[in-house]
Length: 346
Ligand SMILES: Cc1cc2nc3c(=O)[nH]c(=O)nc-3n(C[C@H](O)[C@H](O)[C@H](O)COP(=O)(O)OP(=O)(O)OC[C@H]3O[C@@H](n4cnc5c(N)ncnc54)[C@H](O)[C@@H]3O)c2cc1C
Image (cartoon, rainbow, N blue to C red):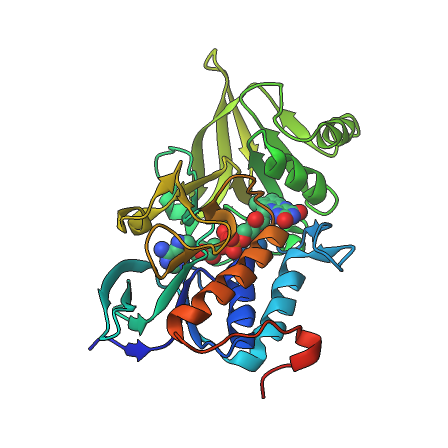
């Protein structure tokens, strides 16, 4: 039997922007449910850079990704939203009620069905997943429960990698940032890239080169990943090869391939919304899409002048909440008030 719910708004995506939308809706006494494909809230901040400092959140000179999410969760707590984690939104049915207002049913991969009067899509770049290197037998090393053994696509806690033999593959910011950071605590760090040029920030490249000189990072260029080897599902070696077929064996407890993320709008692309290169086109005055009652905010939203920054997503959350109010409560005046004047709803 499917779990069925009824609420005012369903938010697709519990990234920083979806979480702040819960707060903004709550301040207007709008109830919501939040669905996320990941097992924990926080989107990119929690999944990709929990321990990295962010410097451009207003009022926070420096805050780590996970700390920002913890604060957002604390801020929305008075509104007690219902979270449905570890499930994809896979379908959106629409109809209308007797007053000709839209009524939606959001369906998830776990069979949950939520009826609502408006939907906010805060799905970032869609359901994101790592670009996996095409290596035979990779899967057997991907599910090691130890966060610093086998093949992993993200670093949740730097400390887990202490005294581990780490092989990092890739030439972008993530590869270099983690090679630099883990070289301070790991038993060894090898950085594998197909060429000697890197796509990372110039300061990171020169820092990495210093660490190579100091013997803290083994720079393995121009090589590509060729195979992974181990015993009983435990990774032992990463085998790399250059263009001449020359092979090297790199001892490894863990391989971190940082080949970027594949962004997939998935079923959202089928919902009849105007798209702009894999993003959802919205009217910036309301954050509404071309479909009445469906809004898009955060990284997934596109309009002229859009900046993919958390702070801009926060503002879009406020804009969407104010545009949703008259849809849900037609004829009910909404007087603009500062939070300092009205306080938190009791
Ligand atoms: C390494 C790195 C550093 C960054 N540094 C900064 C910085 O300094 N300052 C800054 O402003 N920004 C920074 N960003 C960008 C910032 O993280 C994003 O702008 C922000 O996360 C966007 O938030 P969001 O809520 O729109 O989307 P996301 O954080 O991407 O969250 C979207 C959520 O939606 C979920 N989802 C997607 N599709 C579905 C579906 N069909 N069903 C259910 N759930 C779904 C995903 O699982 C995800 O949890 C950085 C990004 C990276 C990768």
